[in-house]
Image (cartoon, rainbow, N blue to C red; front, side, top):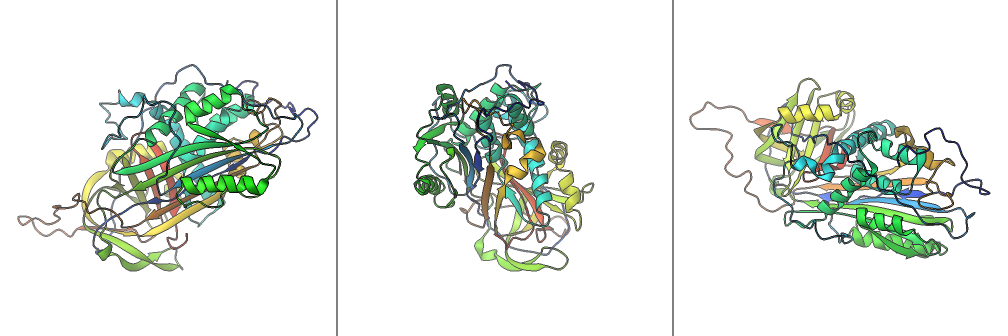
Length: 502
């Protein structure tokens, strides 16, 4: 249970082994592609998009516990790898344990429930963990920005949190508490069981079929042949995270790398290659999480209207990028005078949306520091649909991070040290995490079916005097979020500083 043993516990669980074997977490996210259609216009200062807020839910009391496997010879140091992936192209995902939740994805399912109706859907397990997942996303974003000031930032908070939640099934005592609290869960209000059931609901829901939107999430374990997983641990991973266990010969490092990399490349349709490198005989298990996202804009852009235009990276750097245009767009929009930024929401077909935040000159840091659930709630309440001319860059963005130096700053530190208690994975408690690699890639372009969403929208009316249309031009650094409305999950989060850098 969370908190067993307390944080101050300093026991050495290694016995005769001086250092717990490393556990390596690798994360990769395949790209997300989107399409649009439209023209162009002059630049003008204006408002912003919309957002969603998930009501807080009270947790249940029972906790899921999982006892993990023993390594064959107790003193042998072993490594565990956790791989986080997210991709643009949908891929076949591990079959879900039970079929009772295989419903069709509901169209136009609101992520933000109206204040007067926050009852039924708010009880979904994924909603019970959505606020904490969002808090974790913003906390991690701020750390990544601090580590790389002035650089593009892009990652999948959901992929990382899902992998860490899976890892927590094998943790105990302070290690378990640190992982769950590092993920921003208040363990006095939510139980271990509720946390894992929330992720279970997310995995199942994201893998439901839809003609308009393709989102797939999968989890896999590559396990040392000599390592026998305990039934409880293996069962919970399969039941809660639909994790597939695959036997791997880590004594043949090159062969093990090829097996894992081929698997990942296939699941991501070629988007992620050579994910795993430098495996050795100490590797005990590799945990893999991947997310696929492929969507089309509800209001697509017309490629014929895309033109090369300037993008102002900073005071001294100007780059030329393809700028897409919608001449008669209608989106939820807001100009936040308090934080000096524009917020724009663009919907995909299906149940996903993207939020783009364009700070005024010199206000990026102000906006980043204000990224909280309270800010999101205020934006959601103030967003209004507006007719506009939208000019938006066509770009690709990626992020590749070693999170083993960042997660300790979020309170997850014992798992990387000799204090790690991952005894529910290994009966002799000789595991630790050595590396956490995460990679994410996103493509934004015009591609999409011709939609009628913008058809018939009029900016001028015969009976009204001429009013110049609102022009929203994303030609300087901005922030972005991609959401799944059914689960309230932030799929991707990032900052585009220079759209020409991939």
